[in-house]
Length: 193
Image (cartoon, rainbow, N blue to C red; front, side):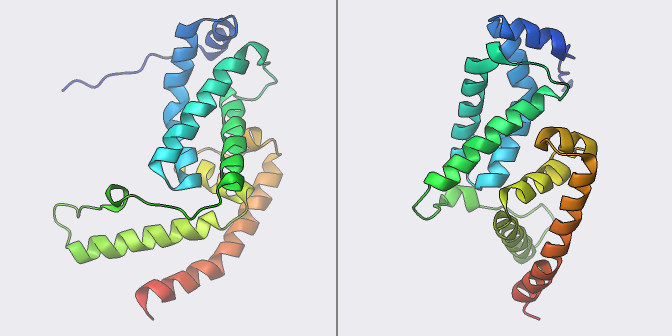
């Protein structure tokens, strides 16, 4: 099957057209960023349905306010991530009931040549690590998601988080130090050492 290539978008021109009301231009921006925004929100919420809902709200808000968007020398994605960050913060604040996970969301199938027990242990480790990350302050969660899930450089993360590259490096270092002991405790808990 031939691979479908996404059309390279001239972001400045597309932003200009979108801010002038072009739905087609906004659609191109949506296609460019929807997966990244969804991933960010999913890792912050841990729930596919809420992530889908919040992602839709990010782009509804962006579409409503794009006529007011001003290029301030940071990527357009930084604006979207800020909207997403604010919506996720509100979601966490408003959420008073316990997190519900649907049975289909937790269903994990083993890889072709992997023993089911190995799959279960791997899944438990991933879930435990995600729970640990979700206990971090929002800025540290955002940093880890942007660094390890999205693969952004420290400079790009700084633009998105509105911090200097040095501040990002410092936050990253403090986050890893704080996590080190918790991850060691997590290993002991999971592996039963």
